[in-house]
Length: 152
Image (cartoon, rainbow, N blue to C red; front, side, top):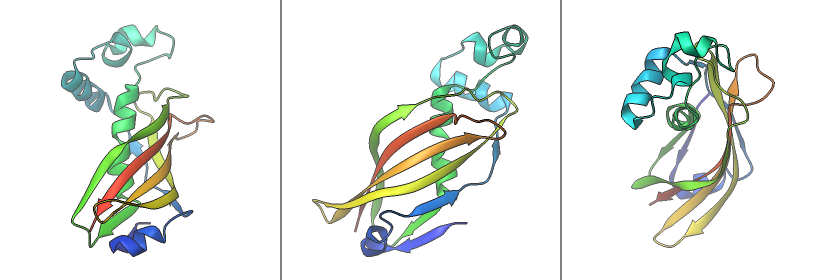
């Protein structure tokens, strides 16, 4: 379910809130190959299904950075911010990839707002905890503490 907020005061009110889970997204070989082409990372564990089948994961896996980049569309399912002039991804405090995502697997995002603070320039900074879960797995694909800034 998407939470919709209007303006900085409603963003501030999100501090400490759990935003829930996105829907599931299947990781296809086509998506992995497209990411490999965009980043020039054609390591065989990602793009060679035959060789990867004999590898350590029993098949091809998504790039860790592909998994991280997918938090953007998944997060848009959880939070809709209106009434601001600009929102920017300000950075990451910590990122880990505890478990690989196999091609054909499904992921979803769980998000929680850790804090919201005022920043110069009539804005706020949101600190969020993101967990990318893998359907049926005990360990997540990615855990990240992310920073967004929103300006009125």
